[in-house]
Length: 481
Image 1 (cartoon, rainbow, N blue to C red):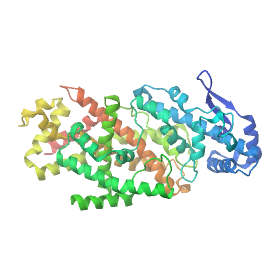
Image 2: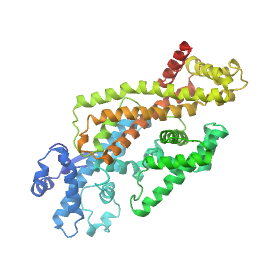
Image 3: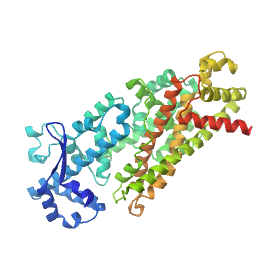
């Protein structure tokens, strides 16, 4: 029966703070009587079972016993989903941010599995505190998301879990939420004082953010008014139509013509710069994460209804493919972004092309400091080298380009593990969004590693993956010329 066992096994924390699993025999017997055809089927029949149980629980005219048991069965499944989410968070961020799954279990597995949450007991003293599983049950809509995906989202946004992760210096928020919630004046200050962007670059970024606010915030407000989104719904990537409207505003205000792809990329670059500032203000350092345990395979599995074969060999093949694409995508991203940067310099300041290339090589491949580089390329001060190289902007642009390149390859590979004939366009889009979030975390970690190294290592070549790929590009270009 596979994962269907989760519908009568309840995971909780006991009085000693230990994780325990209770088998609800009465729920197992009830399920085999009420929905025997589904219980005896394969794991891919989870969504129909969830719909039936949810319908029974919400049917106020139905038998009381069915309402109670259907709810408890769903709570069993939810407890298992919460446990898996806590484990994934530990695997992904635990080492760097100094927490374990047990720290999260205590915060998220707060349902004792006893009294039902039905209408007759909601206002009783026993339910003055409503556990996370209750919030999941009340907000879950099977037409909008798979239960696994919905639980993952609720755990990440659960106030106590979120507060704990913030204390550990970990911010789980999408790029689009960061852009939506950051004020223009605050952005201007961050880009000037923290990232040292030029006045022109700062103004351009702020105009982009203003256009994003004008389109994205307005649409989100209308969605709330129509009831399309409720509560603290996650901010999803802008649609192609929204990106076209943003690009249209940019064209009218800045007289620049951007494609949808360029608009998306520049929004991601801006979000990355703002995210870096948020992380720094909370933990006063630039964190690094491991690239050895990407979660794209698990996320793809959770975000769709049909079954995936979880054979370990298949998962290993997927992860091996993922890792094999990191370096090629980074190489291509660096080549494209450096090409754009050089083209811009040739148009605006052709005399600075060679000093720029020399400074890049000295910093990344020779371990020179900015102050040491300045006189070697004919400049007087360190800040002039900083303004010439614009390393933070370079990393952010490479990051956005790399995510786009990697996403195309990984999504295509993930589809080989999915029964895509049974997925509609909306489900495929959700899978792509989930994979994008996972890739974003990994690529951000790669860039953080590069930036952290660049701020500490002196007088020897930098060894981060970004630095090595950039040096390879510079050396290849030097040989070609």
